[in-house]
Image (cartoon, rainbow, N blue to C red; front, side, top):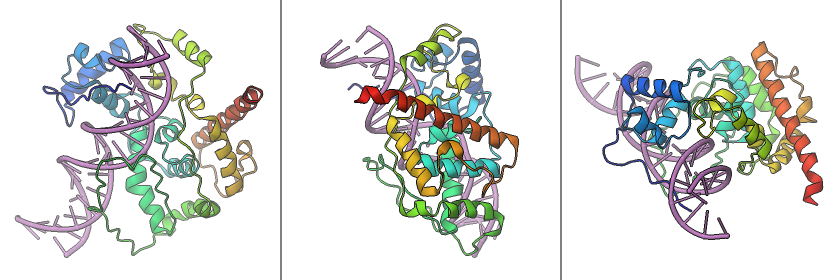
Length: 276
DNA sequence: AATTAGTACAACCGCGAATCT
DNA sequence: CAGATTCGCGGTTGTACTAAT
C-alpha cells in the first residue's frame, strides 16, 4: 500500500507559522476552498507541505474555531464522551462545535487526565497505536504535586466520575472506528459542493460526519456503556439527575449526540437483514 | 536575578483507510 | 484489480512561557 512520501523534503519551511504564511493560506482557502492539500501549498505560494497546511488550517486558521476557555460544561462533556469513545478525539471534537481534536487532545492530556488522576480515578491509557516504534517519551516531565486534592472546585466532576465508577472496573475499549461513508451521503455532499469542485473534505462547513464514521460495532459499545454506567438507553439519558444543565448550548450538544446515537441504532436495524 | 522544573499547546510523524488511476 | 496517492487520525515532540526555588 503506497504511502505518501513524507513531506519533510528539503526547501520546505517547518516549525511555527508566520503571520504571512497564515495570511497566504487563509486567503487561498477563502478563494478556492479546502481540499487538494497536496498541491495547495504550491498554488498558494507556500513553502510548506500539504499536511502542514491542512493541520494549520484545521487547528488554527479556520474561522469557526473557538480557542481556549474551555468551560466546565464543555469539560464535563469531554469527560463523558471520552468515557464513551476513548481517545477518538475527532469524534469528541465533533460534538463540541468550534473545538478541534488537537485542542481537546491537548486539553485532556494537560488538564483533565491529571485532574482525574488527582481525584483518584483511573484514567485509562488506551493506545492501540502506542506500540509504534517511536521511543516512548519516558517520564521526563511528570511529578504531579497532588498534595491538595482540590475536591471543592470539581465536585461536579467527581460526581460524574463516581456515577461512572463501575466503568473503572469494566472499561470499554471500543474498537477503532472504521470509516464508513454511505454512498448516498457522499453523493449528497458532493452535490452541495461549491467552489472549484475539488474533492470534498469540507469538514469546516459541514462539521465532522461522525454518524457515518462510527462503525457498527460501536453501537454495541454504546449500549454496553449505558448498561455499565446506568443509562437504560442512550436515547433516554437522564440529563437532569446528577448532571445539571447549565445552559442551552450544552443541552443542544446532548440533543445532537442523542440524535447521533439514534441514527446509529436505526441504521443498525436497517442493516441487520443484510447481515444474515 | 538566575536557574530549574513544570505546563501548555502548536506542530510533526507515521499509520491505516479511502480514493484515484 | 493492483498499486499509487491523498486524507485524516492519534500519538508524540519541541519549545515558549510560567512558577518555584
